[in-house]
Amino acid sequence: VKRTSGTAWGQGAISTAKWGGARLVDVLKLAGVINPYDLTEKDGTQKHVRFESLDGMKASIGMEKATNPYGDVIIAYEMNGEPIP
Image 1: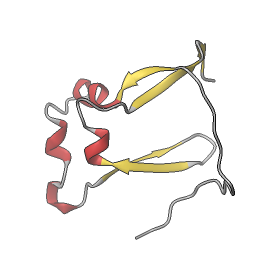
Image 2 (image 1 turned 180 degrees about the vertical axis):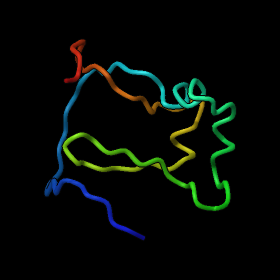
Image 3 (image 1 turned 90 degrees about the vertical axis):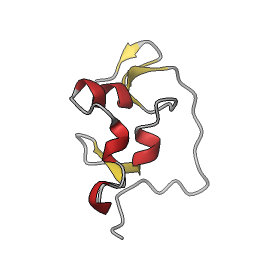
Image 4 (image 1 turned 60 degrees about the horizontal axis):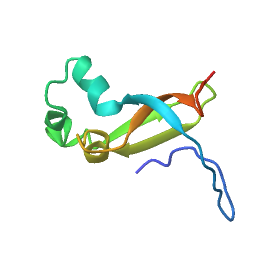
């Protein structure tokens, strides 16, 4: 298992914000993935969705969470009503 980059939070962090964006499962469907669950365990390799920001921060989430039609995974484009630069 390869370790991904992250931020050393020490004691932790807390924040509140109102996020706006599109649900990842909907974006996948618009991209032609008719049934996002078809991606899970396909040939045993696609178990995570990996994200990378322009500044190099990386993170991943399990495919099951990413494709859950009742889930809360969004591709955020605004925070507290303001566009994310």
